[in-house]
Length: 380
Ligand SMILES: Cc1cc2nc3c(=O)[nH]c(=O)nc-3n(C[C@H](O)[C@H](O)[C@H](O)COP(=O)(O)OP(=O)(O)OC[C@H]3O[C@@H](n4cnc5c(N)ncnc54)[C@H](O)[C@@H]3O)c2cc1C
Image (cartoon, rainbow, N blue to C red; front, side):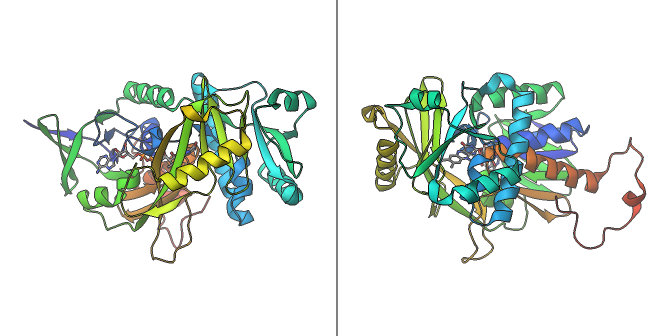
């Protein structure tokens, strides 16, 4: 069976990047379709992460270049604020919030960066230290701060977002195989039916399958690099979420009865999307967990691996796992994910670009909307 359906924008990929872009575009009044190859949303990295709603605390310090660190921290704060305001039911707020552990040697620089990025932080009180006693090992050369980071229930967040999208008429095609795209028509096959989606714009938010999705969509190849990282999940290891900001430190976020722990700077380049665990890396992660959480029940750990993606125009490109929007043709952009917490920021940038390209017939243009854009678009 074949049907032709009319949309303004087709979003490819139903991870957080795609869902958030669909959110913004449908709010602007565009008719939006989401095309997802899996049978459910959040089939990629978005369901295999740590569920850490970043308050900017970590990235303000972990990124060496101060300017970039400030930009990422501010984008995270934007996402942190929006998700807490719009989806409070998904935020796993803990009493005392979370604890960031900073080496004394970099304390002055850390505090100055947090001030600049407006990251909330207060030194841990004796009561909070007592609360962590026996669960968390904090060295004499380390300082601990109460910070605003928290865990979120990513599954519930996606469900809430999806339900909002559906009330705005967003059509979601699951289990969809893209057959091709030409002359403003995207053809897909889903559940025994073939559909042709008429559209004016495409947003490719396919995460680690960006290369394949670009090929299916007839877009120029986007050079991406894949990075594998590991996580362990285990019964809750401490009363508060606790993360070290230095390299090779455990970063733990609580989710109810469970803790998920990642490992700062463990990302290594892989050739293809893979969820296979590298035992050597997972062993190092577990060592970091033991060092920080001496009481953790390590027999009960479950190891997982997942991939992130970055833009790498050549082999020597510096690593940047921060969000990026690439206008690859006049009617398509590729969004490369940064943090899930950055998805609201990236969706704003995409929405602003799509709006510039498509306009909105029911709203009169401003003076500059009739002028040709000269040079580079404004950078936010
Ligand atoms: C181990 C790990 C831990 C992390 N922890 C955190 C954290 O705690 N907090 C945080 O903020 N960020 C975290 N991140 C980063 C975050 O998870 C990702 O940035 C985010 O999930 C990426 O979302 P996305 O929508 O771009 O990609 P994805 O979630 O991968 O979504 C891409 C979607 O596109 C679909 N797709 C792919 N190809 C096609 C195609 N051809 N046709 C149709 N559909 C297609 C896929 O099935 C998938 O559903 C972590 C990442 C990793 C790897």
